[in-house]
Every structure is written in structure tokens, then in C-alpha cells.
Amino acid sequence: MSIPVSRKKRGRPATGQDPTITVRLSDDLQGDLQKWIDEQPDPKPSRSEAIRRLLSDELIRMGLRKVQ
Image 1 (cartoon, rainbow, N blue to C red):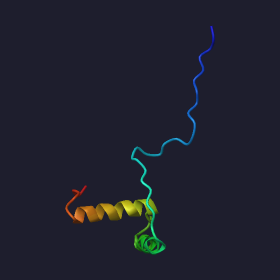
Image 2: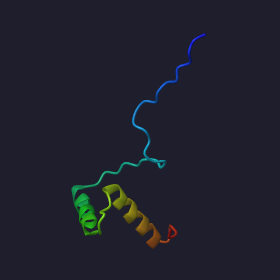
Image 3: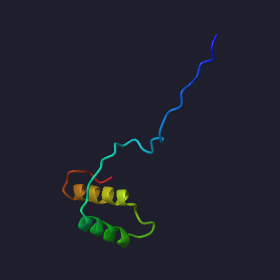
Image 4: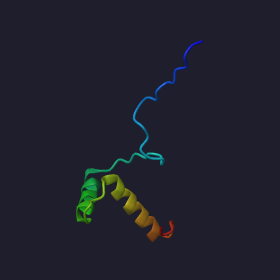
């Protein structure tokens, strides 16, 4: 009788449950985004968090998303 072998998962473990979306931003837009981040109180949001906040705020302003 052989000993069962459990195979290890390959690669980095998942850090979140939400799907990843890649976005290309022009240098100008990246600069504007960085200015917005620099104006935020500490702790400063990451670039990804800043994009999520700005997108969520705009969708709320347009009435397409409810305030959470």
C-alpha cells in the first residue's frame, strides 16, 4: 500500500476575493492621481485604494451606487 501524497499549490496565495482589473493611465492622469493621494490625510491610500475611492465617490454622486 502506497502513502498518499498531497500536492502543494503553486504560486502566490490569493490576497483577495475580488477579480483584478488592469487599467492603463496616461502620465498626466497618473500625476493628477498622485497629487490627490498626496492631499489625503495619513495614512495615505495606495494607488489602488485611491482609484477605488474616486470611482466609488463618482458613482455615488451620479446616483448609480448607494452610500455604504
